[in-house]
Length: 330
Ligand code: BGC
Image 1: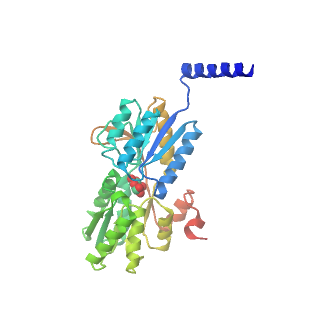
Image 2: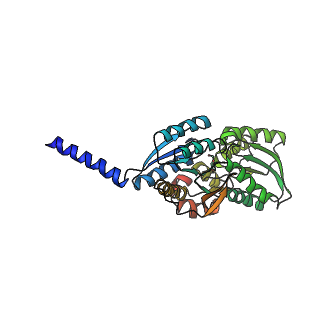
Image 3: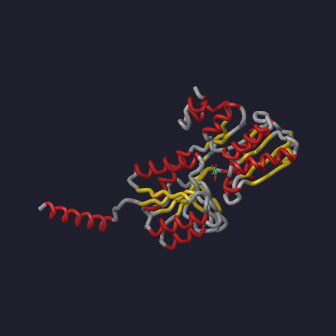
């Protein structure tokens, strides 16, 4: 009898699912890497938000390898995810992921990093030009005259170019801020930033006033190179992400500024949009369009916040991003 009831129930469930189309939404979430602190926060917030809405999230990470990311996404497509969310390692070559997904009628969301030259469904990010501007504005006001180094992010990440554009927008208003050294860091590598800054310091006999670093990871490398020359705290260094280590450097005075991008907003907006697209509805929070070289991609753009010693507590602590104890050690 029990067996019979089980069979009847399973048949009913099958009938219900096929008639109503009701089944658990499956989201593929593909990370370029999970090595940096921020991406683990993105993952946890996104998964929590999607699961709260009843979806299942399959998370994969490619350890900074664009080929691995492509094959991981192919795999997610084969598994029949309903929507794919991608943090691209390489914003150019990731277009092949979008093309494959499209063939399988799976919408794709570019999360934080644009995917270029394809029919992308949605882009959810912070304004990275603004990120660069906020960093440069803070240090240019303090040091309108002097020697500047620029340590850019990864040349395969569109955001690195947007941040660079932000630096430029501000630097052109400060003709006495002289860029004497500039380098790019593959994979946003802090070790590469360390080596570049060591070389820059040697080339310029330690004469540097400001190092515009594109994120907190690279800022960490730069500050290490400065410390080797007993210059940490004497040179203004920038970054973004409000990583805990960076917030500690800001209050200690070895990093001048970081940019806080409230990840909860990004992850929440992306998870909500993923569910909407999976259910064949348009994303309701779209607030602009951003061209990716092929189309104007419907986009959700969020606003970054400048953080210094002065507003560390009122922004980072108040938002619950890090605790006062974690930042100040008391
Ligand atoms: C993100 C930054 C991050 C960097 C390195 C960029 O695309 O916008 O927040 O620091 O990648 O992971």
